[in-house]
Each structure stands twice: as structure tokens, then as C-alpha cells.
Amino acid sequence: MKKLNKNQIIIAAGISALTAIIAFQQVSVADSKSNEPKTVGWYTANIKAAQAKNNECRGESGNTELQATPDCVNALNALQISFK
Image (tube, rainbow, N blue to C red; front, side, top):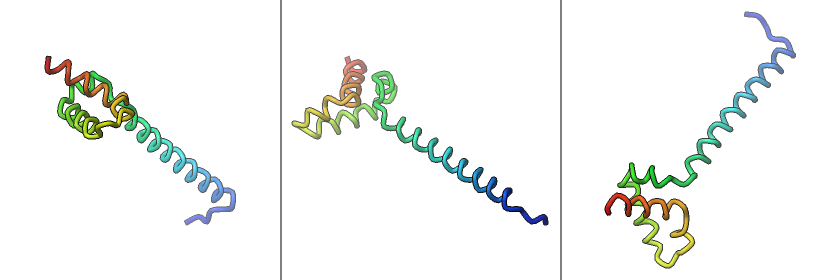
């Protein structure tokens, strides 16, 4: 087995660090997308999720800030469309 010289070790460490940074960024992007509000169309296609979100929003009675969030508004709109 060939012994690695100092430059090869530095290059290998750099590549490992770069790979770790890229992997972390991918996880961060996935996390930020999961926090994006769902659309009315998504809630219409996922009625049980719309009902759960609507219950969560109504459960905070008096919390108008939560009830005005895009997720709460979209879930309610989806339920209104689906059960007309």
C-alpha cells in the first residue's frame, strides 16, 4: 500500500469537507421546503391533512395570527371547495 504524501492528504481532507458542506446544504434546502405553506390544490388532494390543519388552526381560538397564516387559509379554502 502506497503511503500518501502531505499534499494528497490535504486534497483528500478538502474533498471530504466539501462533500460534507454540500450534504448539509441539501438537508437545509429540504428542511426549508418542508416549512413552505401548502397550496389549496395540495390540501384539496389531501383532505385529511386539510382537516387536521383546520382543526389545529381553530384550536387556537383567538389566535388570529395563526388563523391568518397561508397554511390555515389554504386548508380552510380547500375544505370549502371540497364540501360545497
